[in-house]
Amino acid sequence: MLPKTGVEYGREFETREAAKFAGIPWPEFQAMPGPTRAAVVAHYRASGLIEAVLNEKANRKIKQVK
Image (tube, rainbow, N blue to C red; front, side):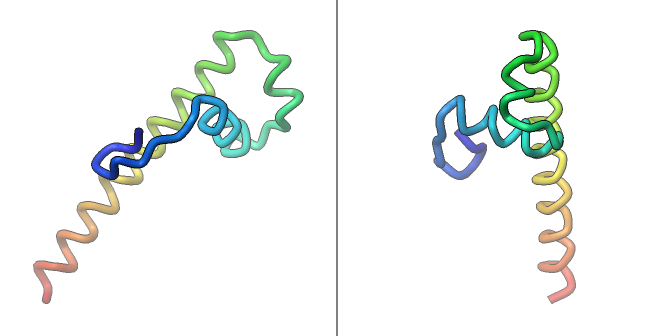
C-alpha cells in the first residue's frame, strides 16, 4: 500500500517498477540473486519515500507563501 493514499498494488508490480527505476531489463532482473533483487526494491522504496517527504515539504512551503 502506498502510504497515506490507501492505494494498493501487487508485489510483482512493485518489483517490475523497481527494475524499471534501476534501468534493469525484467528478464535480467529476474535472473539476479534474491538478495540483489531485494536491494534494488529497497532502494526503489527508499527513493519513493524520500521523494514523498520532499514533495510534502515543498507543498507546505507553497501553502505558507499563499
